[in-house]
Length: 262
Ligand code: C2E
Ligand code: MG
Ligand code: MG
Image (cartoon, rainbow, N blue to C red; front, side, top):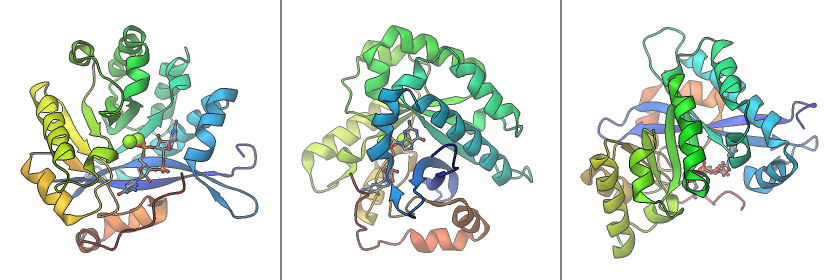
């Protein structure tokens, strides 16, 4: 697929909760097969991890996302960030920092506009090693987000020491708020914990206006989800940036979209 150029990135807007404006996007990889069939990352990332192919795929993702973010910020007025997911295997790659550095240098993207997403379970699996790798990444100026937060048994003493900037509240907790009292309690606690550690919070999987309102009331900083937009092709994302009114229109409650194939 790499050789044939069959990978592409979709971008999902990340919204500032208070003002409703787009502050950046998460890059999500897709595999478009020769037949035109679109394959979800849920179906190939773990296989790519096992085979080690995630390293070259991940390098391609980083380069492509950084080049795209440079385009969004070409006139210097905007400061849109791009978030890229990193898998556990990439995280252990001794060449990681150099790869990130190169991906930034080629298009000339400011390092602070690249957000590296790493799941909580990857970080906590080997926390000492993770701290060292994250420190090296932070040294070049990129921002770090802990993805799927709440699902990975964080040790709070490690969390305090991790050089991270954002926690992304896992979609499973955002689901069913404000109706589900357990998820309400968890989401509230994560936001409070993050803020007391001086981290910002991104809520994943925001699908309804009731969820948006609740999260806004709790002081959540950013949100991402079908309520605002599904992950879309780069051209469509650029169009959304050019017509901010459209983003507001999309912020209205929508009928629930079918979940991506798991
Ligand atoms: P993730 O990083 O937690 O990404 C969020 C996933 O939630 C995306 O699924 C996105 O399409 C989906 N999503 C966003 N908003 C909503 C919503 O409102 N409702 C629902 N039901 N789903 C929503 P996607 O694109 O299928 O990606 C799945 C996972 O695959 C990602 O989870 C990430 O862990 C992994 N992945 C995607 N791209 C890459 C990549 O380039 N490299 C690596 N290593 N992993 C990737
Ligand atoms: Mg992510
Ligand atoms: Mg996530």
